[in-house]
Structures are given as C-alpha cells and as structure tokens.
Amino acid sequence: MAEQRGQAADDPVMTRIGQIAMLQHAGDREEAQQRFAALWEEIGPHADPLHRCTLAHYMADTQQDPAEELRWDLLALEAADGLTDGSAAPAHTAPAVRGFYPSLHLNLAADYARLGRPDTARDHLREARAHVDALADDGHGHQVLGGIERLERELAAADGPAQGTPGAVGRPRAEGEAGGG
Image (spheres, rainbow, N blue to C red):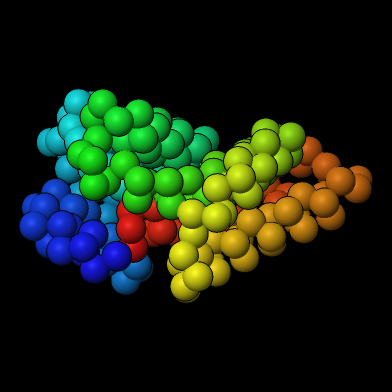
C-alpha cells in the first residue's frame, strides 16, 4: 500500500486525479466533473489503463444521470481489464488491480439496480463477491463489503411489488474506492 502511494506521488496524472477528487469530495461536483472531463480528453483513449480506470471511476461518481454513471463505470471496468491482461500493465500494477474489482462490480450493480435492471445488478454483485478475497481487512475493504451486502438486501427486498422499478434501489457505491483511494 505504501509502495502504491509512493508511485502515485511520482505520477503526475494520478496526482491530478487525486486533486480533482478532493474537489468532488468537498462538494464541488460540477467543477470536478469539468476537470475530470478535461483530463480525460488530455490523456486520450490509449492512456495508461490505470489512469483511465481511476479517472473513469471518479468521473462516474460525478454523474447525475444513472445511464451516464453506468457508461463511466463500464469504461473503468474496461480499463481495469486492460491492466490485468498483462500486456498493458506494468508488472507491479496488475496484481494490485485485482483489488479494484469488488468496488468496480459493486458500482456497476448499483448502476443497474438504479436503472431497473435487477438481474444484471445481481450478476455484478456475484462478480463483486467473487473478488472480495482481494480486499484488505481495512476501512476500504469493509466499506466495499458493506456496500455489497446492502445492495444484496435491497435487491432481495425489491423482489416484491416494486421489482424492476427504476430508482427503487439505493446507491451503495463504493465512491472513490477504485482509484486506490
């Protein structure tokens, strides 16, 4: 973990992402969204997959529209997959990315639940569960696991008359977590 922090400190793109995320967490969602969008344009589609994964993850958190949030979360997952294939990832980064998957899939599950697609949400919850062994026994790990459990309960409760109603399920995202935050 300390090694990852040191690498982020030496990485100007990760530093900028972290600075913009601080704006977002301070409540300036609109400014953060604009700065994330500008950085996304700057780094381009062939940037380091870690940068794209982290940036897309945080950009998803700034979205008001659930469909846009889903789009950015899918981009984050796609970039994470690019890190784990071994071809695009530095050797020290790929194993650490495995810990992103529970959070990435939780976020996708929450997106699909909000869009009234509970079966797809459950598929992503299964994927999140399949990777929980990669979570550390720390605050981040507990937050992600708690989010998985909450969404599982909410989807089970929604199996009644409200099943399939968009927005019927809450938003237990693991905000800011996939970026190593």
